Image: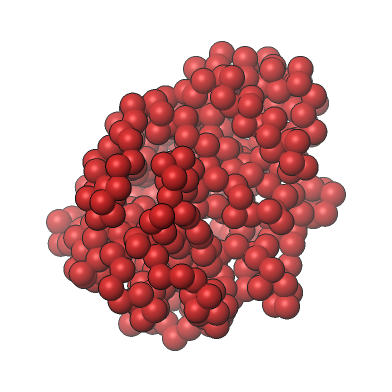
Length: 452
């Protein structure tokens, strides 16, 4: 039987927390490979619940969230102007090495990749894998591998680098490398594949998608680089998956959808079935909810099904900027969504709002106006800083020489690096905005009983 090793690498960045983080793509690949009769194992360097991490005392913050073990690293030259500590998050190196020493030589290694500018963790992981298994074929895929494909190919030679989502071309490549006969699937079968949660028996959350892809074209988002269409899963498959998690005693469900509420009659029909089934589940979404689809019925279903801290994507309250970034929200639509959530029984401090700071052309004054706008409504503010990511419309608006520089060194796509060089909205401006947001949020009651 052919053996496949899946590896989720470290993250190197200035900050990183476990807000329901899972290598969703690798987990779905595992399901597909096991179904084909292959032996699959996984090493997830970001698994806080791995028994080997117990002695490191990583803090849990409830509802499946928590802190990572981290080790400070010397800052790369590109980050010398960034006044923050640079760290590697996840397993200590010795834990990874111990796991590799006890791993039988695999016939193929599949290495995931996260956000483009965190790739140094991937590179270190790749180097160690090559020490232990120098003759094993290795494929790297994921976000960095797709959006910075040429950089990845140059730095990961002679390993293969996969661009885009998992499809029959990927299956063909695996079959060619292994001499296997994994069956091809229709596009819907890929989208319906449930992630393999068997690698996380000690975790109290599961990652779920009701949908795949995104029908919108926000100027700052690269979702279109991975999915060419939008798909809503079969309702019976979603209910079956949720029932499996509930029966296993998992109490927290984290949505990984990019457009969860789009055409909300689908979402409403699924959540009505969830309510009827009586699953003892709490729902969370790291991605913002689309305000236009939070009508009274949707808001009531969110509340009735224990959807914790609904986060609404506002990004900016400036009407011109709203149009320029995709036009999916207006202040009127946003305020109506808030009204519906309040009417469903949420308290104002239980509702969060994403504000995106540092967009091209955005100034400190304009961001402070956004902060004031949300403060007046008594809502919690979630502070997001813009970073120029390849595959987005905003990235293409940059000068060609700047784009070339960012592609040559993906570390420079980091939000903190961009703050350090942004003349319109720089480091000090962001600190002042963040301080204002923190003062506001600290004056609100906690969202969770265990704190925010």
